[in-house]
Image 1 (spheres, rainbow, N blue to C red):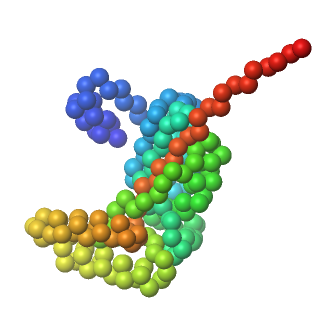
Image 2 (image 1 turned 120 degrees about the vertical axis):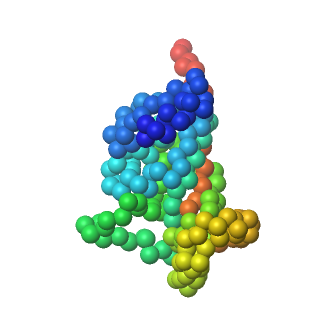
Image 3 (image 1 turned 180 degrees about the vertical axis):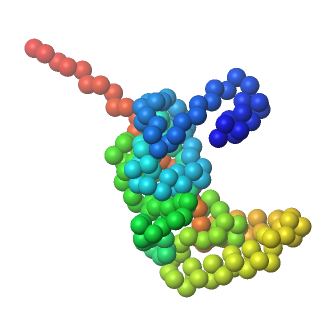
Length: 200
């Protein structure tokens, strides 16, 4: 949004900002220009596959050889999720959760390989999207709903419990039980040195 870009320009004078629609942005606008490209909690809002793939191509294409692309989004990395299948014609959500293997395969075709994937936040702070099976998913979902009712509706209670909730969030993530959004890091291959042509 222009408001966000204005805030960036005010706090970081001299930084150039560009406003583009990720659905239609030219994939080569910043071809190979950046050592680091970061997309945080935005690409899943591109519900249509065509729009999502255009944005993902733009991100991948903007990474310089040897550089990194960091994606922080709700990404499926576990066997169970009720979001694995959506009825697209009736779906009215403002975001789509996509499987990591799909993103990984798509980016591999653009020269990027996955370096790491880890939980960005646990279900305690952001709700759950996946789990190893149905039972842990339901337990996490119930915990999230209870926290919403008992804590997050009150700013005072949220502030009072912020530290213990953050500590529990870290513990769950370390144990591989985040069940929510992920941070996935990809790296673009370095350009291979050219081969000298030998003629006789």
